Length: 78
Image (cartoon, rainbow, N blue to C red; front, side):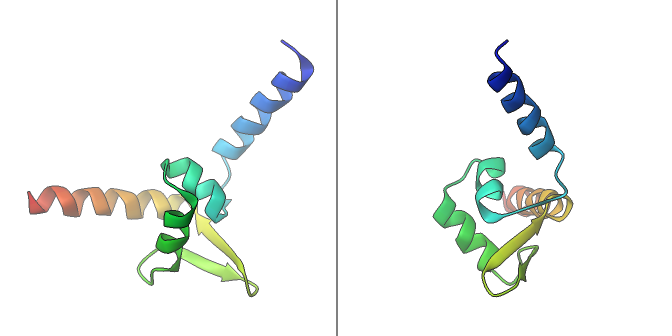
C-alpha cells in the first residue's frame, strides 16, 4: 500500500470518529447534496449551532438521534 493511500485510510477513520462536523462533512455522512445539507442545518429543529458568524457545527450524536426520529416519524405515518 502506498504511503499516501495509507494516510487517506487513516484520515477516513479519524473522520468516522469525529464528534462534531461541518455541513460539508454532514452532507457526505448522510449521502445528501451540499445545498440540501445547508437547508437542513438552517432549520430550527435541526441539531446544529453557529460558531461565529458563518461556521455551522453539527454534533454527530445529535444528528444520528435526529435522523432516527425522522425515520420513526415517517414509519409511524405509514
